[in-house]
Amino acid sequence: MNDRGGAGDEPQGEQTVQVVPRSVDTGQLPLRRLRISAWLVFGVALAWVPLFIDVLAGTEANDHVGLFQVLSHGELALVSAFIAAGALGELIIAVAQDGRTRILLKTVVAGLLIIEFATTAMYYAVLRFQGDPVLSQEGRIAKSSMALFGATLVTSFVAMLFIEGGE
Image 1 (spheres, rainbow, N blue to C red):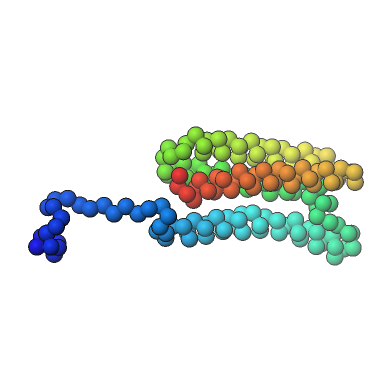
Image 2 (image 1 turned 135 degrees about the vertical axis):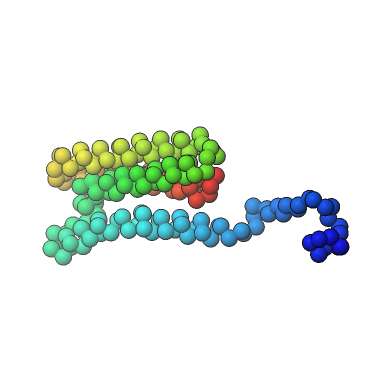
C-alpha cells in the first residue's frame, strides 16, 4: 500500500489528471444559460417596457397610438444604443479577465458594437432634432429603428456568448 491508502498501482510522486470531455456537464452550462437568459430578460425585453407604456398611454387617451407611431420617435434607437454600450462594457471586462483568447474575434465584435452604439445614438439625436415625424415617414423610421435594433441585438448576443463562454 502507498501513503494514500491505494494498492500501490500508481507510481510514487506522480499525480493523475482527469480529463473531462466538453460534452460532459460540469455545472457551468446552466449558469451560462441563466446569465444569457437574465441578459435577454433584463437587458433586452424590459428595455421595451417604456415603449409599451407609451402605446398603452396613447390607447387610454384614445389617440390610437400604435407601436409604429411610438417607434417613429426614435426611442428604439436609444434602447439599441444602451444595449450596445452595455454589451461593449461587458466584453471589455471579459477580455481584461481572460486574456487573449480569440482576441481578433472579440476585437471585431467590439468594433461592431462601437459602430452600432454611435450609429443608433446619432440616429436618435437626428430624429429628436427633427421633431415629430410626418405621417408618411413614420413607417420608414420605425422600420429602420427595428433594423438597427435587430443588428445591435445580434451583435450584443454574440458578445454575450463570448463573455459567458470564456472563449
